Image 1 (cartoon, rainbow, N blue to C red):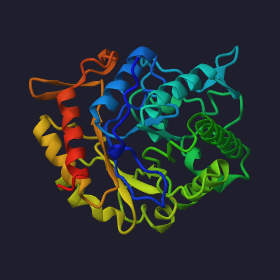
Image 2 (cartoon, rainbow, N blue to C red; image 1 turned 120 degrees about the vertical axis):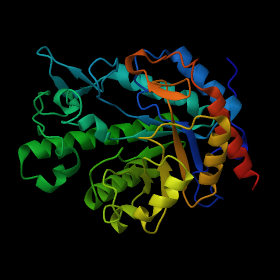
Image 3 (cartoon, rainbow, N blue to C red; image 1 turned 90 degrees about the vertical axis):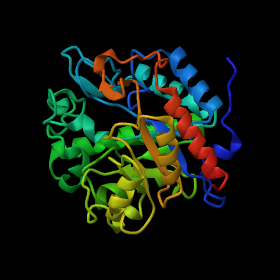
Image 4 (tube, helix red, strand yellow; image 1 turned 90 degrees about the horizontal axis):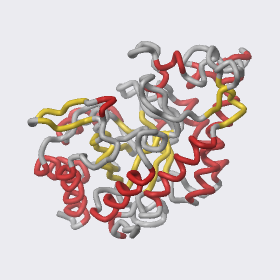
Length: 349
């Protein structure tokens, strides 16, 4: 297959000594790297079409996820004979798939962003309770980790408790593994999201940023480390987080929503995502709104086009388990709106 490359004008610049380019993605497809129903052939076809059409320059890929039980997802750890996860045995099939699919983007100059921790996977109160079957839940593994979700982001505050300490150690092991392997596969051409909508503030972000610096040893990472946070108030996005990473605000539908809510960031670098909102409905509106967002103070924009959302009779419908993982029926006219908006922005219009 011909490996179409993204046009050089749209490639994200990670070197802080060079002029910066903004990040743009039309998609949020969290399980892209470990979705069983998505074949490698279709994953590569999608990356190839993306690069050829120039839709955007980055793709966020969760390192792992645990959501509705019916979803066909690989998991990062193996289970033992009594069906409990063994956190000492990572699942090579899971990670090989993740690196392979991220590679389809990287080799076409679309930079992958790896999300280390997904807070949505930790919900105790959503649907069947995703935390109830999570590998880090001490009731579901043989390794003695804590059995409450909040240990994921607050374990370091309770290290005198053996269960919190086990969570701390196994999370550090996983994070360092993901960072090290990402470096081995992609050199410097990848981004890190400390967490997706995580319920954590200063201590967690400082620790994870320090881990990124010491594990990667790749110079200034100020353009490469991100986070998205659960609490939408200025105190949560304070200086300790601001100094550690680029903060991302979700639920930004359009440019007006951004104007209404950007005060949450206070000062410092930030970015926005359409996650939590439905995508635009027409190519013209997509082009116009994305163009305005790229011209704003935000360092970039992530749209929410994904296989499980279908535009039917001018209404977005969540088709859930019936999503088309061939990727062939995605609303490509809307994708083209992103490409046009990016071109207009780069041309200074």
